[in-house]
Amino acid sequence: MHSDLLQNAVKDQRRLEKRRFSIIACLAFMLFFSFLLDIATGPALLNVLDVLNALFNLMGFAINVDPTTQVIVAKLRLPVAIMAVIVGGVLGVGGAEMQTLLNNSMASPYTLGMAAAAGFGAAFSLYFDAFGFHPSISVPISAFIFCMLAAFFLFSLAMMQRISSGQLVLAGIALLFLFQSLLSLVQFVSSPELSQQILFWLFGSLSKANWSNVALVFAVTLTCLFFLLRDSWKLTALRLGEARAKSLGVDVARLRLKTLFLVAVMTATVTSFVGIIGFVGIVAPNMARMIVGEDQRYFLPLSFILGACLLSSASVLSKIIVPGALFPIGIVTAIIGVPFFFWLIMSKRKSL
Image 1: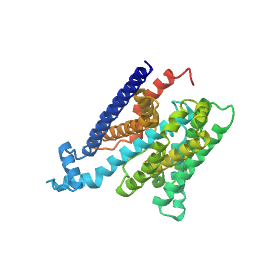
Image 2 (image 1 turned 45 degrees about the vertical axis):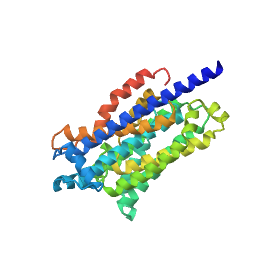
Image 3 (image 1 turned 135 degrees about the horizontal axis):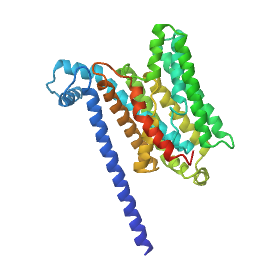
Image 4 (image 1 turned 135 degrees about the vertical axis):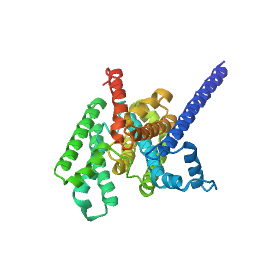
């Protein structure tokens, strides 16, 4: 009898895992479709089939493609579309891990002020003329330093006794307003030209994506995701409670520090190239949790895919809201995310 129960439990678990994998596969296909639409959409509207042919041509297949279409896809739109996928995925994963560490569904790199800190660091570097270095070097480094300062401030609070996750989120929101105010101050005292550059960080934009910064962001993201996925079972155990995680042999303090560092590295890297983009890190993880639960083996990949889908779709919308103009993508994600944020506040009000 016990063996029959065990076999049924194993069958149910395999059925559940198969269903989760099927959902992830379907959403990955939706992401690919949104990715194609992002490449096709723009001032020169392209046919999706022509975009596919151009992509196959880039991969070495001898397909006859219009030279103008090939140049538009390869040089202009493909880096932007890839950057949208990577940045959206990073923000989704960052939100998922911050929510896991703090056991609070309102947590994300944006609401905890990490993205704003990175944005201020970038603007700070620009204001001081990149400290004599090339902006492509000094801006990301400055963004990283300020993002890490915000992250370690939050981590220091988290290590204190009698600090609840709700209070930590409130501290993060305070950091968000602080760094956004400092960013506005730098913009106020800057020249009109520099103020225009800083405006890029306030609204968020994918327009500066090119193959060099796409390659850097991809390498950093891939490395951080590798280490996060290695700790997937430890992070899943942490969701059971700190005491249970410790009883399973998890070094909770080390895991939190490591995860926070990886999230800060990813957030600082993407923010240094695309500016401050909010709400993706809240919406994507909460949607993923509702679909596949807390198992990090599925929760992390789905958070990445949903975050990528959201930002890729927002990239498409940013190009069609005002025909012939590029609408700031940060505004689009806010329009999408704010209603979800309010719904989350109302649904979770008893636990806040």
